[in-house]
Amino acid sequence: MTLTVVDMHTGGEPLRIVTGGYPEIPKGTILEKRAYVRDHLDHLRKLLIFEPRGHYDMYGALLVEPDLPGADLAVLFMHNEGYSTMCGHAIIALGRYAVDEGLVAKQEPITTVNIEALCGLVVASVEVRDGKAGSVSFESVPAFLFARDQQIELTGYGKIAFDIAYGGAFYALADCHQFGLEFGRSRVRDFVDAATALTERLKAEFPLSHPDHADLAFLYGTILTDGRDGFSGEATKNICVFADAEVDRSPTGSGVTARLAAMYAKGGIDLGQERTFESIAGSRFSGAVARTTMAGAHDAIIARVGGRAYYSGRAEFTVEPDDELGRGFLLR
Image (cartoon, rainbow, N blue to C red; front, side, top):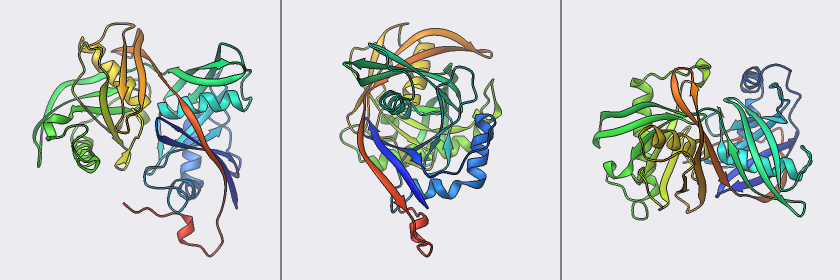
């Protein structure tokens, strides 16, 4: 068995793009492709994402044949727990990758790449200058504030206020100061523990629904913020803890989308106003509400999120028949 990959990162968050070695995926909808890969090929996800080739916070992308009309490519996102519905940092990387690899016709100054994800069609706009791809922005599916100004008594932390918003995936949003945390002073481990505690409690007690598909109605993670959700010219910091306590090094594209939906619904940002979102690693995404729309009965927005991706390497991975650890394991 040989798998080939291209490694990139967006704002420090890795993306391992599979370029060869996967068996052919049967035709069908992207949900059917996800089900096939999950049920029949999940050992390959573990081989690529887990140690010794990856690590607890590795992230991956498997390109598959698109099903949506107008889509240039389709992608299944992979992480330590399984397969996510949307990933903004991956969209930014894949936009550049698609232009560089000739998956779409290159046009200056902007090349459009239509990417089908589990949540729907995401449109990436890739800046191209002198034939080279640069920064990427994207417009995702309708995002909305699902639950506003909620409170819960959380063991070890007391009463915690939170919102839940959808940005291609559902996130709980909470001010980190409620947990006694502060960016630049508190340990990343303490942010992870607090976010995970809130996620697990809400998964058990707070049912979600999505107007398009029941498969989208699950809490993907928690985003802890610095509380700067109102009108401000300053960058606002956040950390996203998703899947099985995985930590995003970037500001999180779908998370920024969800934050923008919550900000707009609560009157904290104007249509077209750009904000800067900073990650736990210090990387930054731009974000703005491009326009308003509806998602079923929910007032929703279309967010525009931008960032920059870089290449970090290319690799060929193998596994020997008697190498049990080589099939993938995780330590935390």
